[in-house]
Every structure is written in C-alpha cells, then in structure tokens.
Image (cartoon, rainbow, N blue to C red; front, side, top):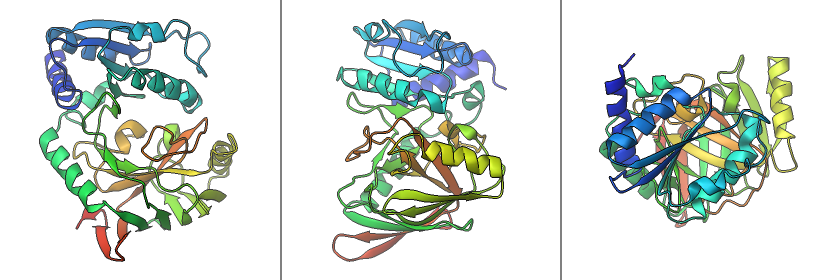
Length: 330
C-alpha cells in the first residue's frame, strides 16, 4: 500500500496527463461514502496544483439513483474539470448517463469518470503508468482500424463472432476533451459497432459488469446484433444475465467493442480497471448513445470481458489485417 504522498503523486500523474489539469482549473469532485477516500486524494491533488476545488457528496437516500438529485447540475456552474469518484451499480446507469450528458453539454468541462474506483488503483496499478507510451499505442491501433467494415473475433474461451464496423470510428480514452470524457483509470480503444450486425458467440470468461468475476463462463449467442440465448453452468448467474438482457427492449443489443491497453491494469473484479487490461477485450450490450455513431438508448450498459482475443479486420477496399493474435498486437 502506498502512503498518502505517493498516492497524491499517482493521482497528479493521471490528472495532468489525462485531464490536462492546470492551475487555473475549477474542479468538482463527485463522490459518495464508499469512495470518499479516493475522492479526497483527487481533491487534495487538485488543491495542491492551485485549483479551486469543491467536493459534492451524493446523498445516500434514494439510492440506487435513477435520476439526478435536485441541485446537482447547479454544482457545474463555472467548473472546468469534473472527477466522478463514486461507487458503481448497474441500477444507476440512467443516473450516470444523465450526469455525463449534463457535463458534456456544457462544452467547457473535461471529465474523468471513475465509477467503482478504489484506493488500490492508486497503488502501483492502472493510474501509475507511462501515459505517453499508452497514447502512442492507442494512436497506432486507431490508425490500423480506420476504414474497417467488420471484425472477426475469436478467443480460446470459445468466443467466435463477427461485428459490423462500417462508419463506426474507434476512439481512445487516454485524454479528455470538453466534448468527450474519459475513465480514470484510462487505457482502452473502443467503438460502437453497428447494432444490427453482430453474429456468433461471445464467451465471457472474465469479469462482467458490476457482477465482477463470474462463477462460470457465460455464453451469449448473438443474431443480428441481439443476444438471443444465454448459457452458463451456474443457473443463478444465467438467470441474472438473462434479467440484465431483458432490462428493457434494447438492453440485449450490442453497443461496444473495447480493447484493453493499460499495462498496469489488473483483473480485480471491477470493470473500471478490468476492461483496461492488456491482452483482453470486452463487448457490451445496452446504451451507446454517448459513443461516436452509437444510436442505442437503454437503461443499462453491461460489459463482458474475455481473454487473449484474436481479431481479423476487414477493410473498405476488400483487404484484411490480423490486428491481434492470442492477445498480442501484430
């Protein structure tokens, strides 16, 4: 475990490299009782950098929240950086989407979104990395995915599916802008695949959404971009996944393909960190309206992670490229 000073250094590296924190910034840290310790480190770091910093504690009454608490949006007045260091719950996806939308609509705020962040993420993990190297890796990967029309994904766990990508650009989360916020910790390249073109089988042998590490791998069969069948040796987990896929009429629609890039990220059962890990990829179902080209509106966004993927990408000109082989970039 790091001491306080070392954690502040890790937080400073993340905030300056990812959120481009400067002395003139006016910072709002949003937190709750569960994650207050991490939030205090970020607030202390911002104050040490000379920023006007305020902390908003989400009220516990009424949680899980489905909408924004009264007066919460008013806290954005004059702010240029927002750090969401609060706990994660699948049931609060609508609240988080509404809050992110309110932040991004200001067109002046750089957002670091960290639902489920823990103090351990400041301890020699995904926040203490070489950000310049990770940005360079992300830029190369995005360049290799330009003009992609589809990707065939396989993995040792049993994943074998094709996703449509035509007109759906990839982006990274390694630097925030006033138009698009990022995660803390960051470290993935992702896109919103075409919602009607997913075909095949996804086997999640890694963490799933807020569930964490599954008791047994979960198999999702896709047809025309929708989950049409769920299989799992653990009957209770299968029922839980089926319930998530039926949360609303669009909850079972493919909405994201993400590729992990962060060399410090570990598989800890928290998707905020897990989905950034090297040699992993994840596919999500539900909401993607906040992604480039995404058009699916849902009350949920559930990620399913799998290990050591291989990806064969088809391009507009008819050519193909093996982007990844057994989790390694080619």
